[in-house]
Amino acid sequence: MTTHYLGESWVETYGKSSGIVTTARITHATPAALYAHAPSRYWEDDSRVPPTVRKDCKDIALQLVENEPGRSINVVMGGGRRHFLPTITPDPEHPNREGRRLDGRNLAEDWAREKKRRRLRAQYVHTKEQLVKLDPRTVDYLLGLFEYSHMEFNAERGASSTDAEEGTSATSTVKADDPSLADMTRAALSILTKNDKGFFLLIEGGRIDHAHHYNNPYRALDETLELETALLAALERVNPAETLIVVTADHGHVMTFGGQATPRGHPVLGADTVVSDIDGLRYTTLLYGTGPGHSEPRALPLNTTVSIGALADAVHASAVPRQWATHGGEDVPVYALGPMATILFTGVIEQSYIPHAIAYAACIAHQSRRCQEKKNFTQAPVEKPPNCVISEVSSVSAQDEMRSDGSSGRRIVVASSVMSDERASRSTAPLPAMLLMGKPLISKSFDLLARISTVWFITRL
Ligand SMILES: [Zn+2]
Image (cartoon, rainbow, N blue to C red; front, side):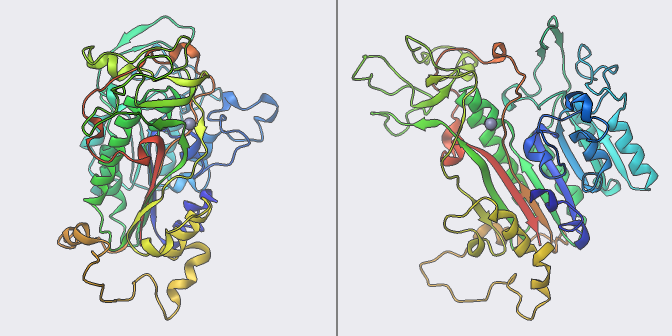
């Protein structure tokens, strides 16, 4: 279903622009669902497609570049250069690593060439510096591949790093700075909002999920705050009176948030102030049901006096040992703002309802006739609210109304999360310990969003 979001029948037919922004590989599960069909999510390049079907089945990266709707998506940003480069080509930021394509093609170059052939104004970038220099007035199609695999966790962004790929000797590399999710969101909107007919944008905080798989709540929460920053950046650039924003997740995680005595102001990454009444040992407020944090005897929370780095790397305890933590099965919240948000997104819904609701609000696809009828429900009926009720779009809307950027009618979308790489070895898992506080990560909204992999959608009508 989501494939058609960006397909000709769902967005392009109605003259809207489209985009995908993620901190995961652009060929990873969530972004790929928007433009590719594949029997396996792991067919991100042709080396993973079984030789017997390689002739008939296109890998995911190739579908993005050659097939509809991928080739028509205006903005594509994330990680995953390795799936676009041939095996003989070293990665620009990690010279000791090569591309993975067996067909010898450089798909980043092919993408640019194909756009040029169609006389489209397109640009490929792979560093933050290039992204910052970009003039959105002269670019209608943008491909940004900022990392070899997933983009760095925010905690590591911009820092020197050590490459240690499986089976190779470690080499120190000073990497180019990566843009943040908010940086990419701003750049995407600067291009997409040029279209007066509107747009659809998916923004994924793709690494919240990965940190939870490691039982590392510090990075999971840090990445959640990065998603919040990106959302706030988007809200500064769109008018919620005409732009539907949906924030949700594709699943939860097995993190629990408990403790017997955690007074107000107690660090959420720290330990309960009282020990277990069974074994007399300390334990952290945040714990996991499954994952690499399991040990016997169980590890104790770090002391608050250790370095911030050690605290950030700490792995919290899990009940059941697993190489990676599993996802959770609980319901996840869906937050929505904008046209019809309170009408369409309420109560308990199935996940497959969400694209239909967006299509309904946007009058696209099978819901396109709605806006041609006499009654146009996009504009909610004006009713005088009771004095005790604050109006839905409140201050954000009012603030945006004052801007005169001609933002008449568009769409955006944002989203997140997926499984970690099936081939990653256990040795890459973070430290086997437990943790305490770090910087005041949770000062803002620490809620269910903290333990879900977040996804959001913005749709300008
Ligand atoms: Zn996952």
